[in-house]
Image (cartoon, rainbow, N blue to C red):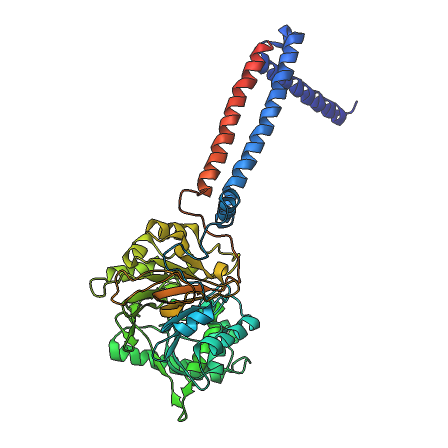
Length: 529
């Protein structure tokens, strides 16, 4: 035998011996006996122990899988929780006519025709679009966009303006862009291309072409803007910033990365900015007035006032575009509605801290910030505004899970009834008619009005009657088309399945079952000795 073959055979023998030794140790450990005393009963006991261990291993694996699935389900809480509640308790009553005395059932067209002031929340998917028809014939558009551009939705917005906001030959009096996110501004250039606008309020964020971002910028005819075209707009932006700094001492830095539009919004921001600098109105082509609002500023008429509560200071540089949002309160003869853009808790904190200079009023209706996200509408802010009704603009089955259950719970905790929460993803187009005087029997297909009876803090007279074909007067009514559909948020009146509690329950119960089974295995192993 060669030396190599001898070594190879020796290694194999050693490996075999190691395996035998390892097996002996396992048997010794299971039985507590040396291999010289192993009996048939010991072998059976060892087999039973191994079998039970395998069973436990499978159970442990199943428990781990259940735990992981339960934890992952928390990501989809806003989909699962309402669906479970809807399945167990039936749909929550977040739409439909309330049970208040003097209810009125009518249509959006009826509310628009019989109300002194109308606020329209146009359903544009995941985005915001608000149109306001004022009692003196003037009008306001606050934002108009959805997350992705859709030509059909753009046409819907333009058609809605023609139907409910403008008569032939009229202009848009006020256009307000709260902040430069596409889901708030995508359709504003289309509106500027179609109608004349007299006054424009824009945020303290500025277009600056920067490297690759400049390739995204489009000029008004839809082609990529030339370097010269971009430079011309940028020069006007820099001049505007210099004027603001000189006149008010704001200290705005146009070159700050967070004080300019990001790559996602560069295109649409350029289209918006390039148009407003060239916007004119009237037979003399009067240039549009462009304003940069700050807290405390306001505009209005004899019966109404729009007051800005944010931004507090334009020189701040925020980590989120949302905190550049204009936050506005409309006061119409004592009835108030708040518009909050995408203001997040950082900006809300600034507004609350500024209450010594500009106290927040109690409002009747609150447009919830950031589409009902839990990054906005903190408890202290909602408590300060103390709304009776809430409007949430968001898309059907949107990927963000808006509105968040936390936001809905915050409304509940601050006394907002489930019947007083309206979601565009559920209710479609929504209109609030202030100073409504109409017919109590007016009705329409798939359209209803919620009468609020919200005159507690107002001087205006409120009358009502339930008889058909009688005139009724309300401080405001809310109508909606109901064309969209979405499972409603959980009902606050006791019938709530909290998904977080369910997840914890699944993990705990499955763990307890496992702990009960383990002793039974041990017990059965002892009996088999």
